[in-house]
Figure: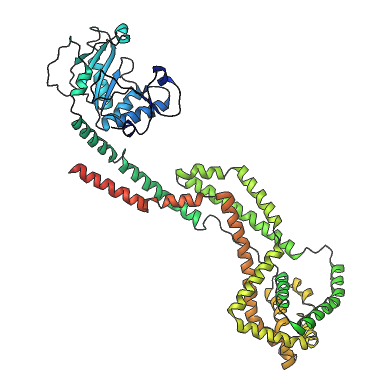
Length: 519
């Protein structure tokens, strides 16, 4: 047999000196040597002290116990009822291990009346029924010379022996070990181990039940963390209508070609000249400096950001207070005030670095290109009308100026606040109004604005909504990445554990073991 296969938890090394076994090591080392005085079928191990203060020795002793066929409990008057000793052999009894008890350092004949009580207490506390009992006298010189005698005893808590014993005649425990029927012992140990594995509380059946309960308990938390219930971005402001309208005009202007582009560019320059006195007059009437639209929009965004972050931390606190104990410690670490402070500062820095103008322009271009691809016939009609409008631009402009949607539209739009429809009419008429005026005259301009703005107004609102959704998604992604990390995914996997394939496979294997044990 391969010793490494028998003791997989240890690293095996050849025995060189007794002092080697006393060295401190994080590894589980086992030192081996052959003996000519033992029967060939026996393998004896001296385990670490199971009542040691070093917990690593408990782990090593457990690893030996799981590999052994027979355990020899060397007890003393002082240690037979030690808590660590009781727990070690209690586990051995549950696993159906065969054990031999040796009471060491016994004073004979003085301790003859006492050892039966010690053994009874040991058996009652552990559940063991020892295969045999030996007494080893307190004889230091004999122990150092390896001449220590052993005396066999009988006790009611042990199986009845088939042979008579002489209490005064020393015996050889090694010979007793060699005579044991190890095939029967192994079968008994296997049955005991299976019973322990299948125990509804201590074994794998109980563990699966606990895992299922824990997994079910995490399901609510997983739903709140992964289905948008934790991070709820609401009330995100829409971008300023005047800025969106300007970007729409720029997008459409970049697609003009030929003489239409030249005429429109010249007319736009004339518009700026005509509007300059009005802008100067408006600035003179204002008592405070006007805040640029996107700067005001950024302030409104930050107000929403702070409110969303506050709600997220409130929900995390609620989840930590009433959620599964398995995630309370993890959530409490997220709720540290220092974590919240760092998160707000990171948000403030990144929010201040955002180029809102560039982002809004990108959204306008993407949405208009998508709309053009979806409704090409409408855009062809607008493009054709735009070419006609360039020829009659002066006439249309006078009409639109009088209505407040022409050159003066740049002045009127800020006064309309969030009246997105008004800003949209400004853009819509710029596209199609000229052609309408050339064909039907001034009376048809207002009607054309009303009918032509319908579709474009829808696109306009979609532009605003798309930009707001993009900005809200940026915040949600930031919070997930910088605050939650992998926590939602980890909890989701844990919540799905009991319904997973691996869990079902283990359940079926345990059911098969139960049927095998009963048959």
